[in-house]
Length: 401
Image 1 (cartoon, rainbow, N blue to C red):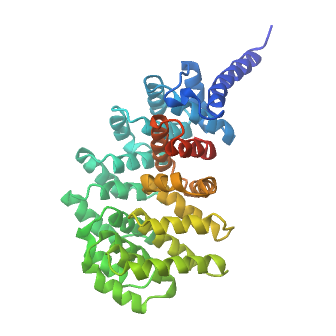
Image 2: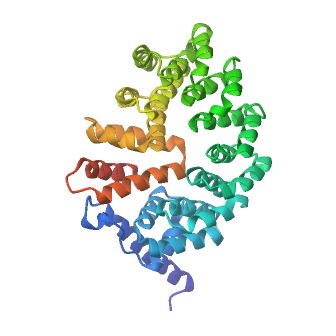
Image 3: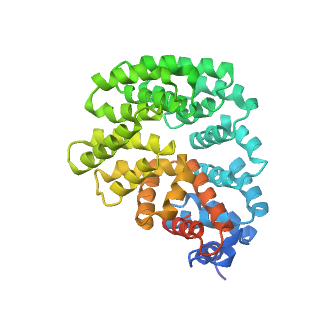
């Protein structure tokens, strides 16, 4: 008689085959079933969820792919159950990330319940969710969390969730205090969030930070550009005369973001990018130039995005790394712009490889899942032979989602 262990192994093997079989069908290229959700049994869904924390990347990847393509009415309840009580904390985290891609009406309440969960990863995803799905009813919980949240991994996501609620007076008051409080790492996250959410109410403290030399100066300069408020122009023009060479790219980009003298500043940035990439010893200048071009690309400056891809594709490490990170950042912050460019790019596959390397460095699971969901929806809707469908298939294959 077979032992209990052998029966258990056999059952596990059959479940793995069910999951991998579903994933394998997706890897054969564009098939009719890729037009939308694909059937997956309850056992395969449950086993796929258990495999989300497997040490083997290929196993984790295939499990995630199978779950993304399962019908929402079957997979969403299973993911919610895993989030609420799975014994593996990493599975709970990954299940919440995957759930966010289904746009289910029950997600918000479940996410709200995770705001006080002891699992750091789970809380970070919860904050990211409420950044992109702001609700006034959650503001008190976010403000309470700010008083106790000290994790370097989690606090920046919480700050961004609050910055997305910038119309609230209490949120404004709190974030203005946070600009000047705590460690530079935390202050940097606050400054970046204020810039991204066009927090004009913060212009005075941001100008004060920009006028001080130090590690936060470039962050403040970047944020001032994103505010698009010309009250910052005098400070930026002064810094252009006095700041270090390494800071000049961000100052140029910030002035351009204010719609001033872009015809001179953009070519300067493109030239600086090529110089810093080709010459050893200029990594800080390269990083700041990439950051400057990312800010411009996210604002719709196509020359900036083209430059990052054109210089990044043939580059090798160490200069390749910041370029890959820049490309990935644009992909998650301004997905439509990136997808539009990829549809017409002569070196599309190489550009996607660069983005994939950047995703590996970003480790932004929630933001990447949003990107994957956007690509997948467009891919399913696009007609055969269209540029959207071709690019979508290439992204799915190369980024393995």
